[in-house]
Image (cartoon, rainbow, N blue to C red; front, side, top):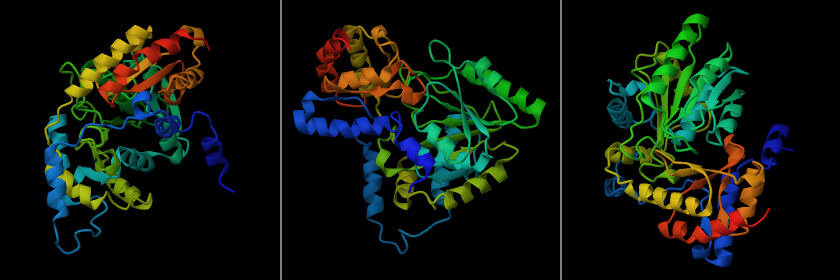
Length: 397
């Protein structure tokens, strides 16, 4: 018999809704044809990796050196960690040494390692809503508790709500910017204010909560928006990220974590993260793509296609009479369920399936009454969905 905890999770209607929709979409495409199914379920980037990445793949694949597929230190190859330190230094505007970096199995692996490293049983992680659906599972993996806090009406940080949620059990605040699913980018001012609150809390209580920044969408921004640096604002900040979204490599599971070089606990944190990488069964980040990324992390990328699709899907929503939060980054549109559905996003997304439209219900993102459209799909699919959305909204429950 499987564990009661796991059984309850897998049988929950809201569990794995994104993947379920993705798999259902594949069946519908077989039945009706891909051009007649509008699959907005999963954030699977459809842009090809940049040529620099392709060239690096070919170069690494041609390597015939001895033990090229062997183990390396659990933290990863030194040259790869040095490259990630260089990348982080450019983003954060401060020097970063490779010793502050641990290579991980995607951003999900990085987050699990961070959480296992810092969580005591029943410790709490504060997260602004809405948030990526798997955060709940990641935190529960390590016997932590999720404390979901509201955001403002436009999904910006409500720093006062975060402040009110802090207590002696708070291990960290977890933010994701640009946010999945809302597309909101938290401003420089918001990060400064949040850092101030965390410093004041730590000084008064003797425990400084970590600020975990989940940043796989960092460079996918619109209208010249920038994601704020955190290392210059808060000592206990840690970055967890990957190359899944920016370089279109989600299946390769290559990412890393980086602790703020001025964090007073950095030595203990990195030692813990290396240990946790090993005992969680990852052992180390994939060797092949560590070598690829070391050669191609700075590849130039053009995300204008996503921005164009964002404008097109917004036009479709306007035509269908649906309200939404206009994204500032990533490739998701956060859409309000029509009023007549009384915030029942599960029922409404099931209703959309009758019109071959696949979207993720907001309840899985701690966003009841909303649903998520992933527009990292063909522009033609977006354009073709126009009448289907209109009909779905007009027709009854």
